[in-house]
Length: 111
Length: 114
Picture 1 (cartoon, each protein chain N blue to C red):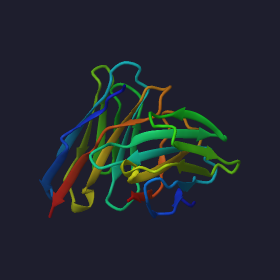
Picture 2 (tube, rainbow over the protein chains, first blue to last red; picture 1 turned 120 degrees about the vertical axis):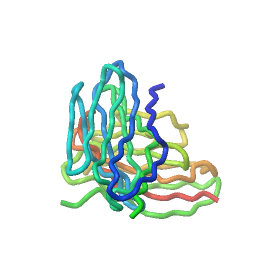
Picture 3 (cartoon, rainbow over the protein chains, first blue to last red; picture 1 turned 180 degrees about the horizontal axis):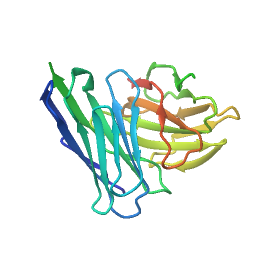
Picture 4 (cartoon, each protein chain N blue to C red; picture 1 turned 90 degrees about the vertical axis):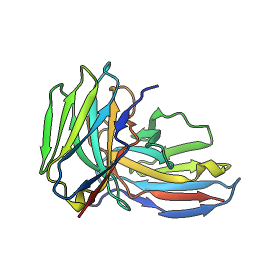
């Protein structure tokens, strides 16, 4: 059974702080790693899909890195804003299997 | 371009009943996946349909079934409902169902079983 772990489970930061969280996944049979943002009462929204070891993606103040050899990805948010408050999900795919999601990191940004 | 839609948005049923949920993917998308989310759990994969064929199935009992129509709309059915089936059910669509394709999620159907 594939296991995807996210840490921390929840995080409270002040507006303006930069933060990061981790997604750990199996390092064998890697195909793709997805990041989604899920705001309360909305649908999960895709942030990044990463496929190459060493890949870095950026979208505004949010960026992500990928290390497939050691099985982890970091998501960074620079200068957190209240509108960044959401649950951030990562999901791993080994190519032949469906996406396996972690339980998410719940971020609260306090103004 | 319209997003993924799901109906109904909320549903209350009693134990033993059956329920059907519907998902309409983004136009042109042929793959639809279904997920269950319960408190404290991540999104649990139920099944994926592509071109009317079930391509993958998660580890759920046979009470959970689905189908896809020629217009790519998908339905999910749960028979003999149990209290533990209370959850948010999400569907997601992609164009071809590839592993590196972005999944576009619907708003979900929240099912409460009493």
